[in-house]
Image (cartoon, rainbow over all chains, first blue to last red):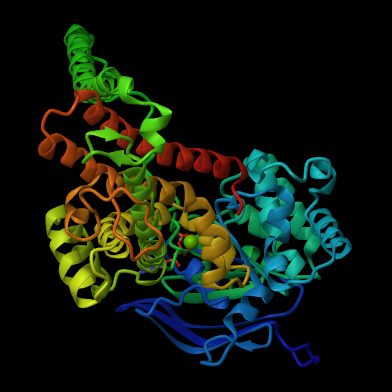
Length: 256
Length: 314
Ligand SMILES: Nc1ncnc2c1ncn2[C@@H]1O[C@H](COP(=O)(O)OP(=O)(O)OP(=O)(O)O)[C@@H](O)[C@H]1O
Ligand SMILES: [Mg+2]
């Protein structure tokens, strides 16, 4: 507690969000240290996606109202002058359904960086391409067919590609919204392995309905219920000795 | 079921491909099997008949035009001036005039229409303004072409003092085709999956860059289809050019957008109604050339669309 800890990469202070008059987040506060894997669990509709969408401002509809403080990767996320585009480069998101662009594998990985850095040399972009695909464990599989359409890949490989395309932008935080729920057990295993490989270099916040997965991959776990952050604890202790009654009930499977 | 609530915009409803017709659902009551088979065959017969009824007139028109008009076609017919008050010679100025008119209409309607479609699909959202504009556009699309002609006369010929000219006629055609180009552009853009936009925005890419590099390339075939149909309409309509741009008999080629010119649609009308004792083949031949021009435009656009589908980038 009193050891000097590095500045958190994500820090929320009594964060609340309303969709119109519906309060989807209710005074959420927490910190995440850089390099951690944090899992986010809770019943459907409790606000998990809402919370991670706040972190890179994908919740900007004019009918949404946000209160409280949220700092991510050094940006004051909700401040007026915040450079949303720069924020999103630092904080990338992966979705439930893999959504590669209808381009080749190569162009998918380099899509973002090419638009941001107009003058990227051939050598630089090739290096980024290989590095990113290696990081997600896809390089050996696709290095001979980089020009093929991304749609020709398996679901699992497409999801890895969607992670790989964030990496050339050198992000600090990866937000993953149920990244494995469209995958089969092998695919889930592979993506979990990849999360583990990225541990320490990137901060990963992973929304999941799969409590086994949360136990397997995350350092700390957050449990949300009806827009509230009920508990955030080291994963092992949250699942063995939950501090809150509601957490206990949830992990026993009583909320479904 | 993931409904992609991540989407700040409404996700596009992509109709799920239905596997097979409604009639082949699993029904435990086998007693109804015979009835359902009969319904099925009646249904397919009705559908086939309707299809034939739709196809026959089109084929009939084309057949008639070819049989009656083809004899008139010759190099001379296509590439020389009309002579002796249109009773002899070719139809070159009408062909050239139609190309000019359609060209001017496209130069106006495509950029304006596509940009407006982009705005309505990608920027306007579900605001009241966009609903009012939508409504206006739909109604505009239903305005009869003769009304467009009167508008063109009032606005372009008289108010802007373009006179009766290719410019005035082409702009009138452009205004006429605009609503459909806007609507079809908007529809094509909205059929691009929202997940593509999300992917791009999440990489910190601006809305415009996303449109330019992701949305437009994927919507382009659909946008082109809308434009193609309107090119055909612009080439074929007579009323809008009647008192804005087309000349009845003007056996010279236009030299600028301020010239008057003949037009194929107008020329067919003139030959059929105004020139007694003309051989039928000349009338049908001219109509055939009009249809041929439209088909030519369309095949060009279809080829382009095919090419873009294969290469997907621009
Ligand atoms: N754009 C929106 N407009 C209005 N209400 C919304 C919107 N997005 C989400 N909600 C509502 O906010 C609540 C939280 O939604 P959210 O998507 O964050 O839940 P979740 O925890 O991610 O659920 P799931 O596990 O099903 O993905 C839900 O009740 C949902 O209906
Ligand atoms: Mg969710």
